[in-house]
Image (tube, rainbow over all chains, first blue to last red; front, side, top):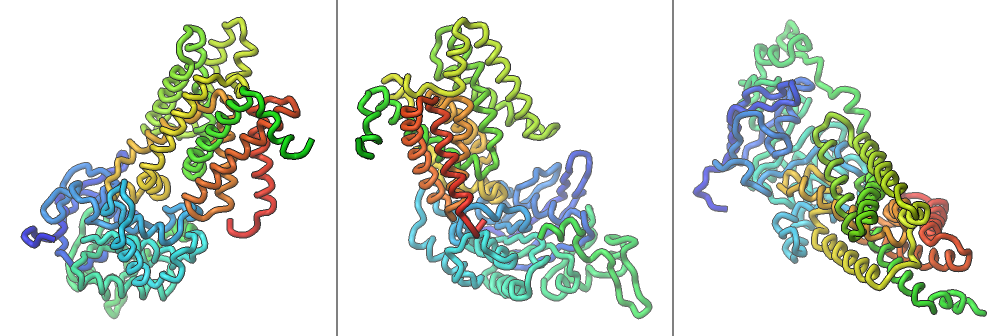
Length: 264
Length: 273
């Protein structure tokens, strides 16, 4: 990687619309390369939309996204994205190893065969996520936690600069949660930027360098102490937010809605 | 007469030999293309495309043009129209398919019904006439089958990714619209190639049934394709025999054999899915 280029992700005044509805409205922020960021906000605040815009799944209505000072369309492998698990057809005839190898396709070239190095990277990714023992299993034999690890392994095999995960901690077992956390820690040492969305405010505050609070508009971004204040929380969560006498804050809307949960 | 003779005797005739070669090529082609049809949930689309070639065939008949290219043009036009309408998002894709499918079928039959030999021609288009395969037909079938199979082989990885995980395909900046349109075009050509052998109504079955059977038995795409192709070829062979001895329409016989295989597998297969 050439070190002359400043490594960072810059979101510049982006707006995204679904038909008439404005989901993201003039959002700007900056993520230092190799840092970790948790995106929080009420349901429907635009967290998933923000991620989909950054990986190029949704067109921008206005604004720009810059990765390492280049327009984000220029990058093919730089951003890896782990979608919510409901979006995948788990009955598709592929093995765990096949799925992880897909992360290599851009580097291999779409018309050539994987080389020795690619198999090594895939095996490493499988070991790192502790799923090497099920490498040849069909993906429909997996538990929810294992499914998530497969997609994390694929994202690692892509060797990205930025890893984006949508709700990686929703509805998974504790071991997978721990594996995910230790992976995020290791990625930091490799200077990989990690962005996740979550409903768990404690987790966001304790495990990530920075927190981004959003409700269609950007409310605040920075270290958790700066972001999670009475004023900001009230702006984001409105009536679902309560301050107790002893200063504790309670947010009513900390869990995904039922339609989301039943799909797990 | 012993069993081997029973299997081989019909193929002493050259029209049966040509029929067998055409049947096996079409069986294999439909079966492999069919894996994408099954995995992308496009069975209705395949059915619609098969019928959509009717007006093209009819117009070629009436004006004495090449039936094959008339059919391909009609199929590609309808495939692109379906893609375009459903992409605009005002109606769902299956509604768009249903409307265009019915329209093309009606238009085709209206055109064919204006001809004197209406009944015979219609039954050939609908159910195929494998025993009437000429040398030229056979060569066209083989060339197109091989061309499509090579395209599928070269594009294996991009097609795997857009079928399994369209989101990954987009984040990796694959030209997803282009590839989806390409699948539709390959599907259209496949249907046209199988026109002579199994006919319009039954090519949709050959696209879905062998691939559906293979889906039950395999856990990786390459093995699903290989098994599906084998089942397609076996169906063509035994279907032709059945049609010879029982004196039934060959296209129907091929589909009946392939459906029998599916039923046996479905009943005796336990577990996984």
